[in-house]
Image (tube, rainbow, N blue to C red; front, top):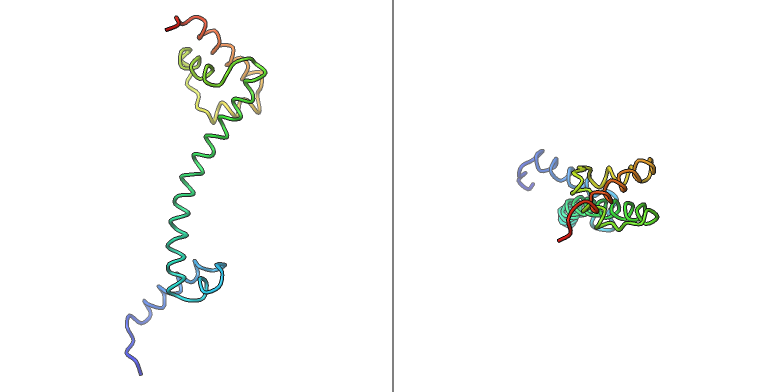
Length: 123
């Protein structure tokens, strides 16, 4: 009979990995060594994905803001510049939510950005 190495601890370790590999294809869900590699890689993809999600969301907010600004006759870059000059400190997430749910309030903010641009001296 072979000597048991690590006994119950080894079994727990393997079970934990196999549980995380559930739903993977072929040997990745059945063989410990391949499952271990697949789980490690999936963790890396998950970490990267969480960072990319933040990037994608910011891009979506910018697209929404730009779409809401088009009928108001101001470009996104000039709008952001006007907000800075008017000292309006709203982040892009809040601005995009305003553009969707409260178009009148968003239009007022855009007007104050336009006024700040007009009042500030051009470089």
